[in-house]
Every structure is written in structure tokens, then in C-alpha cells.
Amino acid sequence: MPTAEGKPIWFELNAADQDAAQAFYEAVAGWRVAPSPMPEHGGYRVAEADGKPVAGIRRSVPETPGFPGWAVYLATRDVDATASRVVDLGGQIRFGPIDIPHVGRFAMVSDPQDVVFALMDAASPDQSRAFGAVPLGTEQTLGHGVWIELATPDPEAAFAFYGALFGWEKLGAMPMGGMGEYAFIGRGDLRPGAVMSSAATGAPARWNWYVHVADIDAALATVRERGGTVLQGPDPIPGGSYSANITDSGGNRLGLAGQRQAA
Image 1 (cartoon, rainbow, N blue to C red):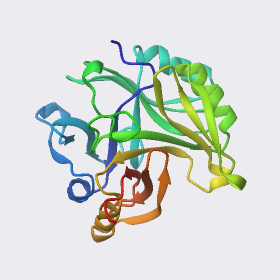
Image 2 (image 1 turned 90 degrees about the vertical axis):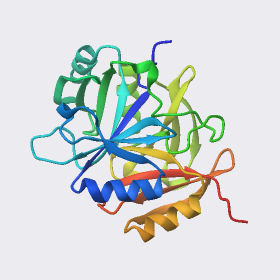
Image 3 (image 1 turned 30 degrees about the vertical axis):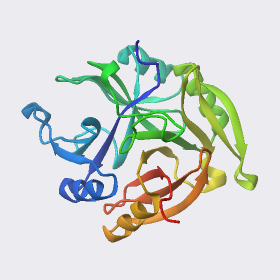
């Protein structure tokens, strides 16, 4: 079955210090991180969970695309056409489109609110296991991405943009009082995440993603031990699990989601 348009299929960290990032995420997320076996990938490191590639860590250098921190890669069957559509809808192409040997074709783009994300037509999109199902526990997703979240200064404009780009719709919302609403996105069986107001919540305007961890409290303790910071949480989420937001030892933001094991 073809991968749905807009499905998260990869996550990538632009790290000032690859060694520090690797050590942090191996401890917090339980990943196994190793250099890509392809020499043309230039020192790119691949993180695996239960033997499946889920994310990449590359060294930040001025000439590389993207931005400091984590990037979310969204699937499309035609990167060039979708990137052109981004521009037609008021966004920008930041880099590409360009081919990555043995991986696929991608472009870094930004939406009309200047939030950056990546488009990718993977060489084997049906084999991507970077993103798993929620609620947690319905599939083997430990160490995988399980939720994406857009903080944007204009949620309505974001719905219009991503709806036109991927066919996403607003699938209900959860009120957050004075911080507006937490509005769920998706289409059909794909329900990858939510949109919220960065202006109302004070969150930086960006795409965030959440990694499934076995024990949210233990993971947050490891975050602190390894030089990271807990920004929020753990807070209860539907299904009996908890979420939290952190910065890693290099200051890069990320979400964690998992159950509490302690009594």
C-alpha cells in the first residue's frame, strides 16, 4: 500500500556535536546509533529502534540544508510537484529538491508562517518504520516517533496550507482554556498529530515530534542526568500515557511519550 501523503517517515537532528547527541539519545530513547554504511552519506549517523531505522543525526555545517534542531520529514509521491505547490500556497523552498543516494528525493521547505519541514519521496517508503501508531502499545513503537505537533502563530492559516498540500482535515479539538485549542489533524486512517497556537501557548513556532519511551519518569531522570532540561511534564494524555517536552544536551527540543512504571 502506498504511503499516505503527509505521513511522517523520518526525523533528523542537525547536531553541533554528533558524539554528544548520540550518547544522549542512546541513553534517553534507547536507540542504537551507528554511522551510515554508505560512504557518500558523509558521516551521517542512523538511529535504530528494535532494528528499524527511525532517525538520523548529522553534523551542522553552514552549507547544509535545514536548521539547528530536529526536522520532521513528511512523505509525498512527487517532491518536485509538492515543493512547487508549497510556493504556490505562500511557503518557500529552502533547499532542493535533490536526490540522496540509496535513500530517495527530498526538499527542505517552510510554510507561510516560516515553519520548516522536509518533503521526501523515499526509495522504499513502504519500509519506513520511523513513525508508529497511537495509542501507545497498539504496536511495537518503543524508540519510534508516535506523534507530531505543529506550534504556529496562525492555526487557521496552517490548516488551510496543510489541507491544500496533503488533504489534511481538522479532526476534532481539545480546549486548552486561554491557550486556545489543541486541534487534531489527519485524513482517513492517518492521524499523525495536532496543531496549536504558538502565540497563545508561548511555544516556539515549529514542528515537534514525540518519541515513545518505556518509562516516562525514568526517561526524564536520564534527560537531567545527561545534561538536558525538562521543559514540561509529565502530563497525562489520552490512553493512560504521559507526555513531556525536553531539550537535549545540545539545547534541541523534542517530545517524549510513555507510561509511568512507578507505583
